[in-house]
Image (cartoon, rainbow, N blue to C red; front, side, top):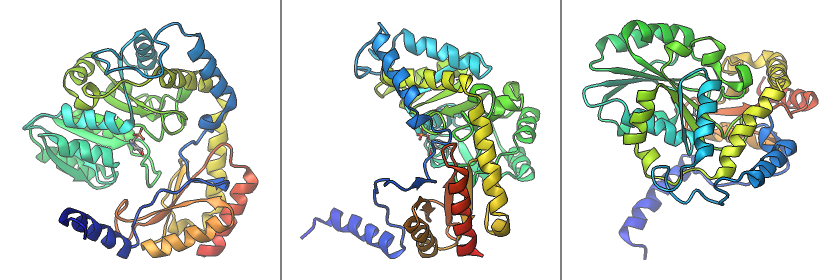
Length: 378
Ligand SMILES: Cc1ncc(COP(=O)(O)O)c(C=O)c1O
């Protein structure tokens, strides 16, 4: 007989199975990749891989497999400092602070900076790490309707204390852009601190992949940006771009920065060389733009089922966990790795196929996938 606590957990799992939302770990097989976040193919680029390996071997600082401690104890070294100086410069700001992941960077910003009596307002479609960060904070928190400036203004006018507004430049599940300029101007007018998570725009837009805020010239209106390295940059980790006080505050108070082992050197080198690779290969951005335009043109006839998106993330809404799983399996059986996104990851009724486009998807593969989608969904 199971102990009572196991029974309780097992009941919850059974409920997940009954709702067709039980998660399991699967291994990517040799199908054509239309699901990873490796938009520019950097994670699988052999030249970059070799360059990282050679650079790590040639560096004479901290040649250790692991960082050996947190950055405040034994994990810090010159390469961290040099990389942060480089990151601040490339993102047109004064300061940058590296984190082990985008999750921990968002958690740090939203749980640490807003204080009791302050207010966090975030887009209702924000990623889980923005929501979790806000939940850990002592500030009040509200959502505003997705990309709705008027609703945001209403929420700002009701807020108390210092106001923090959190958005994504490209939304992770819908792939649409935030109205960045309008939101940045509104926040500036009201003295609110705008936090922009650039997880899905880093690498894909801006000079050397420095993101949409820089691309739109909004650096001075956006005091905090989060760039992550596990998506188009092909490696792992994140940085918070800010001014000096925010950086110092995070170093002093952010628990997901203080109480964790620092990133290993090879990861830092991968981040630095990924930027360098983008600097040397600006054609990758025009290539992904072409793939996005091609997919959009080929799926025009099912546009009513798609979220309107001009990013590498293309969502096709197929309500119901069973329905979206069935279509995903059909497409998978034709050799395409396309994943269904189920509720509760997205709202019930908004289940979708989340199709990610990559520079390494051939035009022919995109034609074949689009044909299959159009014939299955028309
Ligand atoms: C918008 C957004 N922010 C943050 C994260 C988390 O980043 P990381 O995977 O580096 O923890 C993700 C990843 O899924 C994301 O989509």
